[in-house]
Image (cartoon, rainbow, N blue to C red; front, side, top):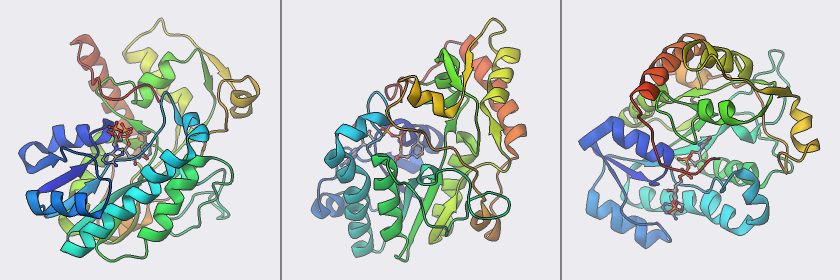
Length: 291
Ligand SMILES: NC(=O)c1ccc[n+]([C@@H]2O[C@H](COP(=O)([O-])OP(=O)(O)OC[C@H]3O[C@@H](n4cnc5c(N)ncnc54)[C@H](OP(=O)(O)O)[C@@H]3O)[C@@H](O)[C@H]2O)c1
């Protein structure tokens, strides 16, 4: 399979590292349909992964003061990429985000389903991601892969392990999360199968930040300490402009097509063991600012 990756950022590069010669990262930005058609004609891919977007620098609060850049990157760009892919008949896997959901779902188990409506009332980043999902999900030959809080064995500023172990104050919350090794494998399978629809690419089970930090202290740095605060304290104490999305996702559509991810507690221990080894060897992924 020949994969064209749009987005030379954190996730795009982790996928390229894993897929090697099977994948190429687009050498230029996509500003209009003609740019996209030129890339498709040059690389002639079997599938496109859209890992481009505007995630905010140094973090997602940046999007609150840069609405137009955020709308262009997260809503207009995916539509432009889809337009080119539809015209050439190429399968597109678009990266969505689970942070279009805030709080518990109306379902008894509190988990959000793939076809539930997003509820991003005030956060610009979340609204722009939801807007793209809303329109792209009407198209055939397009898959939407929503991930949450990526966790990886490779130390990197965008890795959730690095983020929460460097904050002096950490919110005491529980979430659905995405282990990157598993996500990379799922993305590959989705592109091979060329399946349309929305997929929650999150590991089964919920993970508390407390569990991740406990594992970090067990396997990486026993001297680590931090203060615990509530999710509301994040904004009250001026540590963030807008509240963060915390939620649980059900991953029913992957199961339906026979794609499975490891239980989150199995996957996080394996990942933390590899992370400890990578740290000792001085490995790190320099891509992307702290987000
Ligand atoms: N990382 C997370 O925590 C997370 C969680 C859930 C969902 N996601 C989603 O996953 C995707 C990838 O995230 P990421 O963490 O890898 O983000 P990232 O590191 O910020 O990478 C995004 C990349 O998109 C590129 N880009 C922006 N506009 C472009 C355009 N017009 N044409 C081509 N490339 C363009 C950026 O290039 P420049 O730097 O040159 O502008 C950047 O390299 C995004 O859609 C994000 O919303 C991420």
